[in-house]
Image (cartoon, rainbow, N blue to C red):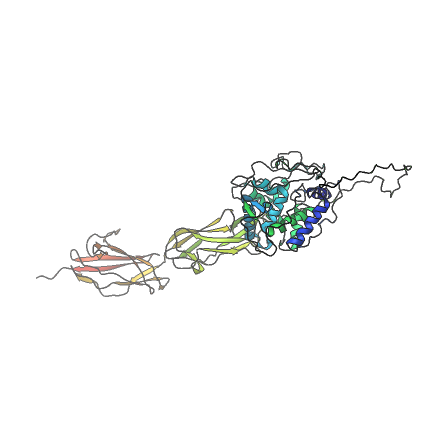
Amino acid sequence: MAAQFGRRLRRGAATTAVAAAAVAALSASQAPGSPLVASEGGEQPAAGSTPSGDGAASGNSPYFTDLPPLNTPNKPGTSTNLPVTGSAESGIPASVLAAYKKAQQTIAGTDAACRLPWQLLAAIGKVESGQARGGRVDAQGTTFSPILGPALNGQGFALIKDTDNGVYDGDSTHDRAVGPMQFIPSTWETWGQDGNADGRRDPNNIYDAALAAGRYLCAGSRDLSLAADLDRAVLSYNHSDEYLRTVRTWFDYYNRGTHEVPDGTGVLPAETGTGTHPDLGPGTSGGSPSPSSSPSGSPTPNPKPPTTPNPKPPTKPSPTDPGRPTTPTTPTPTPEPTPTPDLAAVQNAGTGELTATAGDAFAERIKARAKSNLGKPLAKVSVTFTVAGDTDAAFDGGKKSVTLTTGADGTVTAPVLKAGEKTGAFTVRATATGTSLPAVTYQAAVTARQADAIARTGTAKLTAVAGQTFADVTAKATFKGAAADRVAVTATMITDDEKPAENDKGPYFTDDEGDPVRTLALTTGADGTVTLPKIYADGAAGTYKLRLTTEGGGSVVIELTVEAPAAA
């Protein structure tokens, strides 16, 4: 299979000499390239063999063999910032370029150790589909019609029988590579992603396909900044040394600069070789290219007449005679890389009830766990905790949001959460940073400070003549015997009934406007004490009651005696 593609690569570059010269020239003129690793299966299969191909993302399906021009977008050593203009070949359609960069950013947030460069996705996208047919995609990044490779029926290609009942590729007999990144259905079923957060995993969407390709290339513990790991990743996509060299050539080309072009205006590949992408448009049909005309003024050499060899009598083949038919051997398929555990969800890791008294720290720490699509804990996942709702609660340092990374057991613990002065319920959310996965929500509540007892601090009888004021009244609130700091205290003038209510007669307080009021909300100080505002004597002579109550059940009733004015 790979040897077939090797011939196709050479045809796509016009001749073996041209392809070799182009690769060599690019390597020499643009910068020293990283060395290529040997293909993981050793020698490439012989021409005419048909390995299964299902150990590769694309099933070793056909690919475009065009090579970049020898002149690079930028000279070696110049800035790698994207130029405003450049050669047509260096232009990448806007949506396609955005998808590659978004995939790099997403994977950097969940698997930073992989160090995936978007230029590698661009190189593979160029070779697999000509950057999604030159960027013929809609506003969501989906191709206007499916990009399908030929049926992998073993006739010049790998033999891969249908695995998806035609769901992705429309073929219920054999599999076909699908979409801008040319995934075979069985691989897409395992590695497919929702890169544009529309709730679907569509191999014909460039955002979904680019993210899936990135995840696939980062399989295992690969570090794509290492040449050997990058080469193995590319070979896992299509197991062919010629494929690797082609991708490497475009990778080096894009690394030296590229620029954005409008969708639908990208350069389409000129040659697909022995296999075709049937719907890529004109100029992409398979077969050998038309032979080039001879240079002007150069005569065409006259072919020599064929000579007839002298026939020899047939010989009986010996057991070691190469002419003797042998039992065909089945080439060992390249194993598909062990699926990389892919982030599937962030869950509550056992966090219990979150309650705290105003001003105190929550005793319970918030914990989250990242789980993979294999149902296992996932390490090195970035998780963001956010305090939401009408509250002044915050994490240590007054932060409303913190981002941390899960440990080896897949869990991460948020910093200490501190309650503010505002009581009531609020929520804390934990989300996988930079993903559209659902958040896990934790309910929290802040309760008022408590005092289980309150008592008047003085013992003198409180009396006042009507129209005058009482002496200051001071009380102290305690909780379990200790001073209750900043506890809410309610002071109310009450009736002397079996079920007391607010008294509308007798002593009163005044509000900010000086109007009489008979209920006030107060707060104790740091020592648990509270001094009531001035109390005015009013009403008929007699004894009245003032009740003080606290959050937490503390209560005390204080008697106030109003005396009649002395006779004139």
